[in-house]
Length: 66
Image (cartoon, rainbow, N blue to C red; front, side, top):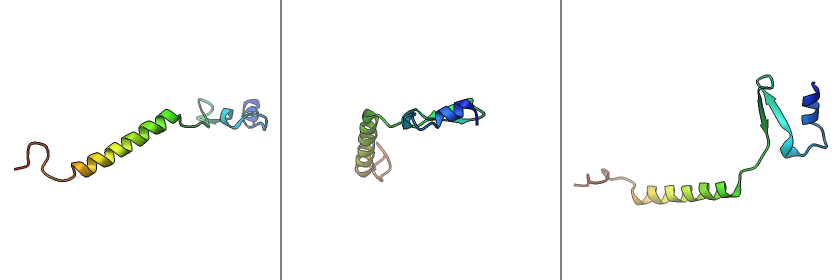
C-alpha cells in the first residue's frame, strides 16, 4: 500500500474527503452528497412526468385525434 493510499484511508481523514483510486491512480472518486437544489429539481421533474403521463396518455398524438 502506498503512502497516498494510507492517507486516503487514515482514520483522522473525514469520510467525505477520503478518495478511492481507479485505473492505476488516474481516476479518483470521493464520497459526497447530492445538493439540495438538485433533489428539488429531480422531484419537480418526476411530478411533471407523472402529470404529463396521466394527462396525455394514449390517443393518436397532437392533431391526429380524428
